[in-house]
Length: 194
Image (tube, rainbow, N blue to C red):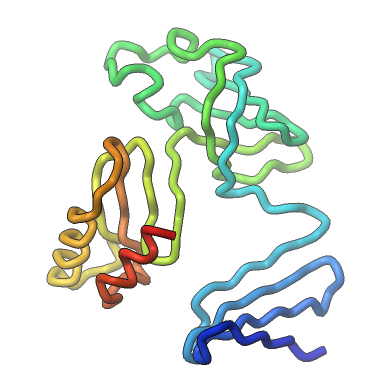
């Protein structure tokens, strides 16, 4: 079966959809003949990695220094101490015990970093990141940064200047992704507004 091609409004963009296997859908975004994005969705299991959830703490395990969070999936999510943002414990160095700052039935905003399996719940974090095409929005981190894979110092400086000029709410940071290298300022700013 040949992949179906669907043109978008722009003549240089194409969306390629391949559903050769009935339980799997592959989607690619081509721009000027170059693959810009690719995703595989299996219908037997919806992908949850990267999703954000408002969860509720159902169990705190002081011996593991972790909490289990109900995020309305089949199993509770696992939240280790290392993945708890300092805003939850007031940046205090002496608050090292999880049960001192988290409580059962407390609401908490989390993101899935590892899919659940048939025996374990999802690994979750409170360090949130919202990726776009050229940027990653980082609530709770008031810094701007550039991907380490961009090695050209002039380009790194240019991207940092663009990011620093962006008007962001207090406590929100941005990272320029590797694909932002060489992209015009106007395109990067459009990405932020999406």
